[in-house]
Image 1: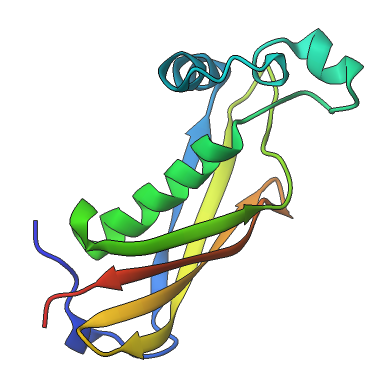
Image 2 (image 1 turned 120 degrees about the vertical axis):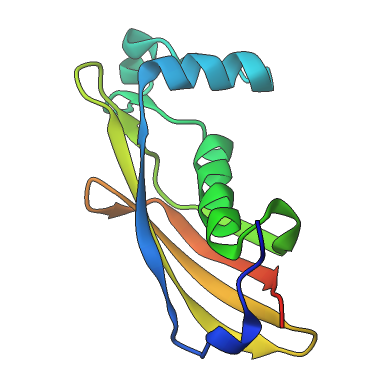
Length: 141
């Protein structure tokens, strides 16, 4: 795979929309892989008892999906030079249907060294779930 071309980008260049579905099975798999066994991600009765509307996806899992969105667009994993987000709202994962997180983005700045700053928007069920989601990618010439 090759990296995205720096010369093909302009400030305002839009990244293609991409959606990811999250199921309760995904939450279990992520919990086992990460060691984060917090019951708000696996026990519906517990999640509701602490004031949540249902199970919620791990914030770091949602962030990982944003990272995959960017690296897939950029062309390879090593293109990601900087990455950060703030967790603003949880992704609600009901029992009967997968949650969907929709990612879009745009180039906000072209930097020296064939690097581009990207702003990421992550939405689930009409709610912005990540704030200040930004990345810097290293591009091919």
